[in-house]
Image (tube, rainbow, N blue to C red; front, side, top):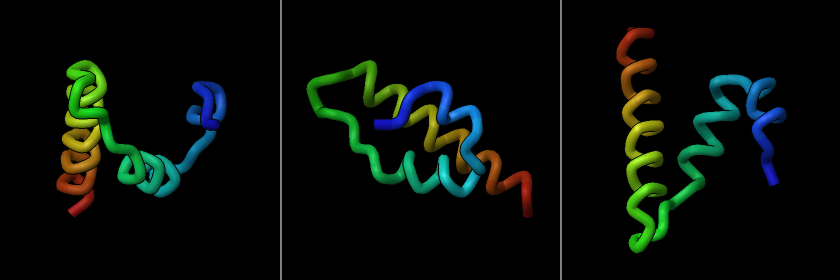
Length: 50
């Protein structure tokens, strides 16, 4: 299991792989919102690197 301390030392690529491996439960609105926020941030970062 990944903890908050480990995340601080992860590379962008590791974070992307980890994020895309998660799927929020359909009955957990907070988890769905968090997933959407992180996916949007990844998209913004990708756009900035172009």
